[in-house]
Length: 189
Ligand code: HEC
Image (cartoon, rainbow, N blue to C red):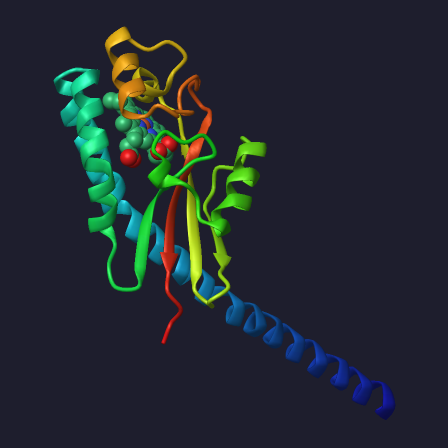
């Protein structure tokens, strides 16, 4: 009788130990990643809001005026939205403004999202310098089609041709993957 009960105790202890150890190991990998994802999402929030209100305000004057607003204000909004250790912006596999060209770490992510339209969540990657990159996919909505759709108003088309002679960002349909919001977070000190 004595032996089985010792063995039983041993098994019980092993199980208790494992049950306690597994969540502890997961927890080590978890919060760090979660808080980086949260940091990325929080950094993007005001940037997205400002872009949207610039677009909505511009569109009140019609798509041609909005185009001017977008082309003049979008780059500055991105620069201002950054903070210490954080840079952010937009990029695409089909660029309008070459200044939004992807950094090397963004290229595989653009390919991944472009290849899989079902992928709607954010992605966090570790960068070579020990910092992190965070991206969220951008999807084409009806309001975007005025300047990124298949058929554009003649005035809009002319203006885009003049401002962006190498434009590759038209011909999209609603629901298409348009590009990425990105955040680059410097390594923690
Ligand atoms: C009034 C015209 C207009 C509308 C409407 C518009 N865009 Fe744009 N879009 C532009 C212009 C101009 C640029 C280039 C500005 C810049 O330098 O970022 C641009 C750039 C972008 C970029 C940056 C990547 C690149 O190709 O340079 C993304 C992503 C984008 N637009 C997505 C959208 C989405 C999503 C919507 C709908 C919510 C939208 N746009 C609506 C005119 C427009």
